[in-house]
Length: 216
Image (cartoon, rainbow, N blue to C red; front, side):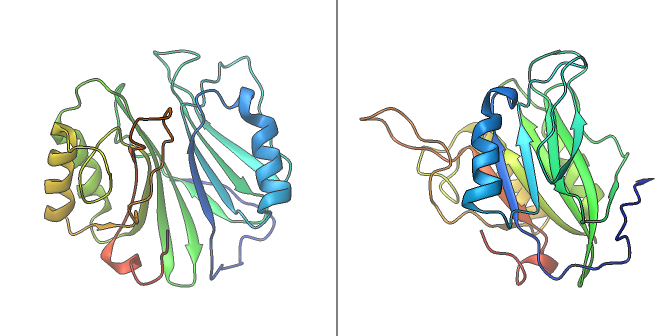
């Protein structure tokens, strides 16, 4: 892991507020993000963004936050992950490579009163993803406090109102195998046009050890 050293590295936080959002081009949504984090809810400690769609030449900052980018190296200007974290929150970047071109994974570690927490920002494309990729990620997180959020592009009755799809069924089996806790409460995470069903392709999971400390 690559240690980052903010000024208050000795602070251990008892509470962390996380927002996850598939922005589909974060530059175009900057005004919305500023309104949300500065006015609507200034207590958001971390924003986990999927499909940031940033090119290396493009700069992105949000007042009060550090920007941790993981641009896609093949689909340049498409996809990509971004974590915005409050300046005062100590963190480490996990350098373990657990994703691929179709399953993007970005992990940081923050320290709370319960211990180090692995925060996983994830985007799963619509393309086929071998189930072994999910196994690789979940296996790495075994015996670690962790929270996984992001656009999984997966549907299952356990978290979505949409009909279950193949990926959803596969994921649900892996979630059960590794004893993960689904945090979604059944609410839609993607609003669709009128006369169509809202869906929840975005999934939030946590380890059993975090389930009593985490709300959605």
